Length: 532
Image 1 (cartoon, helix red, strand yellow):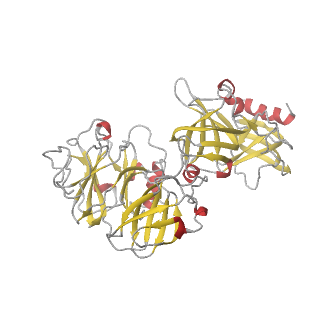
Image 2: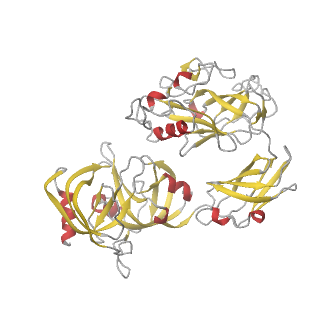
């Protein structure tokens, strides 16, 4: 062990969080710069040898760069993510040299500090997580299962490697990286060079997960995922069509839009812009209500280079004016996800392409509305996880007499399979142009609220859909005055489970929409009729 490694080891072993005299760290290499994301602090990682040990400095890295060799002294520390000691008070930070090839593999020429841990077994990495904490590593593997929230602004996937098949190995990335690259179950990924973080729970006994981490898209290479398909299309104006795919689209792959997107019935593509999984294609003028179809060629690719495969065609109708909807009643805790959401039509038009969502950031689609011409004043009841088709011809197409769950005074629409999560959540409506028509934050004042809730509230406040616009001049959070929960509609007293349509719901009680919590209250349900 070098003198520098011994100094890092001494810091990790030192008792307490305050050191006088300060602990020296001389000649350590900066291996990774960690930006501020959500509630995770910014900082930088230090290491001297490929075998470790390594440490995290929770201090603004300023102008430091990966490959710098530095001297510093540590006089204060804190504990992050359960058991991770991190330096927080430093002095004498000096860059003594630069441009060291630390991101090279330790077996390369010139040798770096990165060790390929892809074949390391559980008995090594997971059982010795503290030993490997903060070291820089390469790891190749496959994402196993859906992502899960891993702190504000982060998600994590179980990461199956050649050496480990264990749920306590997680690839942790920012929400933006996961969305931009379309990371999903079965994607194969290589973390080229990233720090090994760890998280220790407060459970009894505590559980530690090792988290190879990425904060930049360039950290991840060799990505292969399920091929993209064309999932739908809808006209957003007489000269624009939103074409939706199963994966985020690479704008750079759209090099000849008229040839890459072809339409039936005489319209032609002219240009296109990309927004995540959606491509907005400018067209020659459509005829309102006319049937069209659009096809995408294999030259359209996702953000990891995957080419579009069949199904690559979708039908749509020429643009018609869309309806404007407002949420009026919600029941989030029915058995078997049979939750209900009621909406009122403010402006008549088609409901095609309108989505009912849970949360703004990393949204869950609760329902995608069918193509129905509705009139102002009409009521829509969305039946999540329903087995009955949507009514598209009349409000009593599937009458209560034969379909007891339906309401003859309302359009009964079939929702998706995923129910509402009965915690602190935002329920919102987006039109086919992705504009928010209505949004309501609901809070449950029991248990631990989702870390993402304040950010979702802030998003609808910024969109002008909720008041107050902030919390005492600051972005609403769990610690502001008032808190994020205090400005939201409170549905805490609803049944916690197994609710039925006859159970209490949360519904509008104000004759005007003030976009505040005072518009809402828990009380007797009134599905299928206007509220209040």
